[in-house]
Amino acid sequence: MALKLDAKQAIVADVAKFAGKSVLVIAAEYRGLKVAQMTALRSKAREAGVHAQVVRNTLAKRAFENTEFACMSEVLVGPMILLFAPEDPGVAARLARDFMKQNEIFKVKALAMAGQLFEAQQLQTVADLPTRDQAIGILMSVMQAPIVKLVRTLAEPHAQMVRAFGAVRDQMQAA
Image 1 (tube, helix red, strand yellow):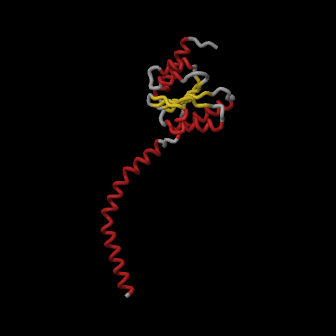
Image 2 (tube, one colour):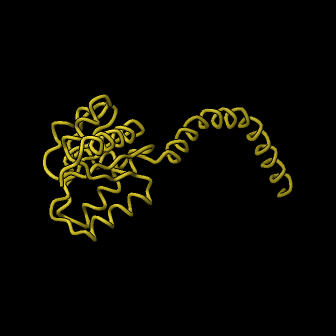
Image 3 (cartoon, rainbow, N blue to C red):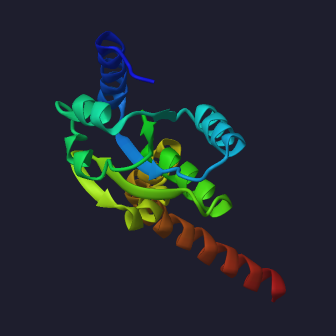
């Protein structure tokens, strides 16, 4: 069914809006998936906070023109579903990776992040990125380690003295 110009402009504006808010976009080929499988993918994406949208390639290319995802225009060939990750790039990558394990027909073609186009093999690397909370926890432990080490170093002479007095006391009680 042919779309009218105003419908096409609305789709381009909608895709451009999601692209402007996203940190990662994954383009995947869905040819051969059944409707139930696509519905399952969309519901999992919705639960994870990832926007999944099937868009005509020409409209997607036009929507990506003034965004950091303009590099994706060369890979948008054939039936594609676009997964937009608004905050955490690992969430969309994990979603695509897990869905690929369940459905061999679903194939990630490329992903784009920070103006760079990555091949499908990089999906696992992005999926292994820590979540925001995990990254903050790692950062806090790294920042806390020098302070903890300093406190332990400053407290050690006093602790050694207490242990020495305790050993002398034990020797005197034993004698």
